[in-house]
Image (cartoon, rainbow, N blue to C red):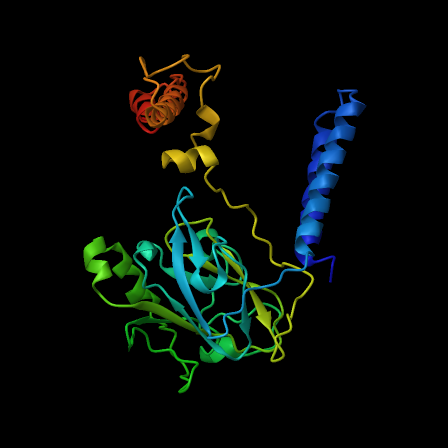
Length: 328
């Protein structure tokens, strides 16, 4: 199991890139560069194998409820779960055949409707989501033929917004699980959205012969996926020594400097910075709070200076305007 399919794919990519590099550099007698490349690629492969085979202990809610919130210190925010502490996008557990509720009542959930997929980021990457007509890959189930595969059921308050049901009264032949009614409500103005009621999702994964992990993610923002470990009736992980499929990115959290300033991505632009002026705010008094705030403003102005120092390589007035206005 340690040598998973995705790891084999990753190795083939590494080998292919190695062959490409040698082919396009036949005229370069630089063995040191090739050795360094080999070392880097082997390290990358080793890190992937290690990440895929670390034992992960999932958070399992005893009540079957996961209360979703958003940690907004990141650039787009990451999910936190009240039952799992302060960790962003925590790995959670679900016992196969049991029903779990994901509550999106907290105002921080605004613009972040939750979804579920067999791979990280779901529709953002064009991969399989949990839907009535999509069976887990490798499963012997025929649920895709009857639209009875595991899928979330979307609610507003006590009102179910779909037709498909795999809970108490299973349905056959209907793939409407409520998402098309649920997601658009998150685009309403915040006061209206907050007054609509409790947004919540119920999910029961009931295919027994599937062992890999599944994911929760945001239907609007990419790069927010969290892992779900499937458990058997004894609460033992069906895939205990692997995290497969992988989440192909790490989570970007604000630096201590950004947390102090209420910003994101300014930590690398603190003064002194060789791309910026020595200062942007003049005559700063000795008051510590004002000095701290001035340091935030200096970093913000430095970031804008770097971002707006552009070339007119697009040979377009519109292109140059956009290159200036986006960082501004």
